[in-house]
Image 1 (cartoon, each protein chain N blue to C red):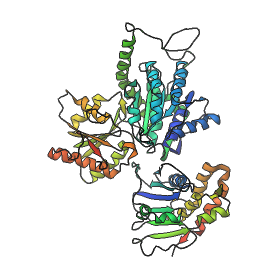
Image 2 (image 1 turned 120 degrees about the vertical axis):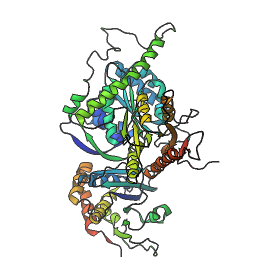
Image 3 (image 1 turned 135 degrees about the vertical axis):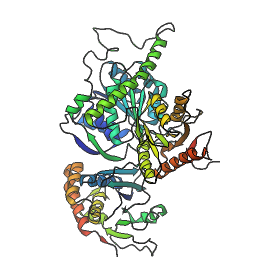
Image 4 (image 1 turned 45 degrees about the vertical axis):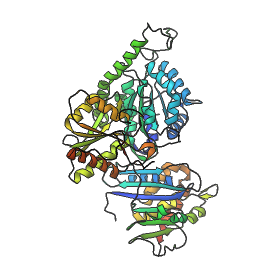
Length: 192
Length: 411
């Protein structure tokens, strides 16, 4: 699908929505599924719940990844919270050809402000997470359903790889997580 | 616990440091948390708690006590480890000097961060550079794998009876500490081939705590006594450790198959290069990406990873200057009031003094306090060197003879 040597993914979430963990898991899943190299780059400041959070993954099928810098021209953007789209620096990175996966249960009107060839997919990650009781102190955990949706859209790794990595990381909690992954994999759809 | 097979783990740089301490069969860890190092000692606490690592884990009340505890444990003849950063290293400083003065082979990783005020927790090597004259060997890692590998090499170098000095393995906070990459964790049989045996009951040859062999150490010594001579010996053996570092890098490559140049520096496409950049830490690896991209555009550029700052690779820097006419030396650290403002560039210039080599050194300071440095920015640095070579013109916007690259305009 994408011919670039190094594929770059940007994560935008709010503190507590697990966007940083998502960037680590995505890089690891890509690596496990045969990509030659992968890196996860979280942008860390004074963290607090609800504050805008950025993280990046870079994955490469054959070249070594040697850059540690953040991603300014992503191939994919995973938006954990639709309110983040109103932040100018987030919106500015929605460049031509980018693929967006947005956590939303309804269509978002961009008022024709988007660049050319921007593809937008939506998945109700919050609804899925709550449906399977994947929440900490009432806050829905969004990383696994978002990565399930990304698996479907990108084709970079399958549910089998997700299960392998999730089992390794989360042990007994893997089953519940995988249910959200499968649900998101099946229900993610293009926002038309 | 044993590691039977080689394993590739997808881990943070900090976790790679913790795995290295486990692989090196460290016996005593003392720990105090500080960002961005904390996950090193957290992971080690997991290892010890789960029985995965048969080590003593000492929780102390400050960084000063971290090193005091390691000094005691090391004098008693054990392999020791800790990690710190920034203010923590500064607070520890008195005991840092003590560890070197007592000639203890302690290894500590530094997830380097900017020094306050104002508060800063991001990549900046001023913390470790501030301990330049303490008598520790100082090495920099440019990748996650290199963190793991450098800690293994550190024990072999430090515990060599011709060295018996401590070592810092430094890497950029967040740039390497919190990013994740695949890291090879080596199996026990290979590790045993490479690492020296753990110290036996007799401990180190020169200093021990043993009722059968009473010894006084750390006592007051009159000016007519051997204090002066002890200092000379630290310098003498630090200088000679360059041979041990080279030998260790060779042995490491033979057993594990990963090369780190000659141990002191690692060259990248230098032989036919017209200009070169010398970097420390993660920027050194990233510069190699810049080299490849510029070579595709037809520019003959090369890059050098400075792996050791102490001992300083004087001979290697001279050799590079013989091959390359224009060299940019990049400091991700500040040395206020020094000839160039950066520690590494000052020393590179000093290395060439009196050699008759007329290579030009462009001192560069960049990435201070974690300011991001992109591949594009590094490519621009190379292009400035090319312009310097072609026209003899230094960049316009130098500050006291140094290019502060990426600095914002200030009044």
